[in-house]
Image 1 (spheres, rainbow, N blue to C red):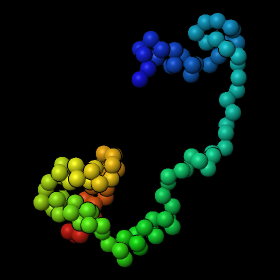
Image 2 (cartoon, one colour; image 1 turned 120 degrees about the vertical axis):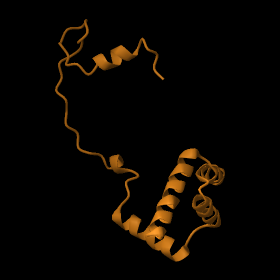
Image 3 (cartoon, rainbow, N blue to C red; image 1 turned 180 degrees about the vertical axis):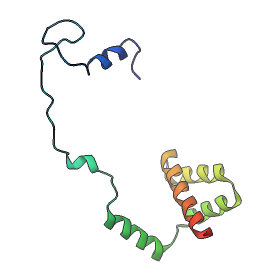
Image 4 (tube, rainbow, N blue to C red; image 1 turned 30 degrees about the horizontal axis):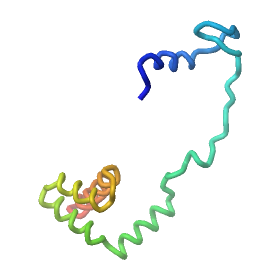
Length: 112
């Protein structure tokens, strides 16, 4: 999404500065600070407790009706139809792919 003319300048920024106001390495000479990892960096990472609770709920409650239908579609081998159906239910293709992948893993676990 960047124009080609701007791209080369983006890569030059990583080069060490010379202390001179002009030229390819223009800018003040600075030392890079090592910053402590922020809690926001692990946002979305799955904790052991959350994983356990979700597994437990899945065990007790089972699958939603649309998930059962997707499992049937996957059993028959209609992967694309399963993705399209899931997309209609979940709203985005990324969520649909993730859900179909998850249900596919459930199927392979059942086969063992």
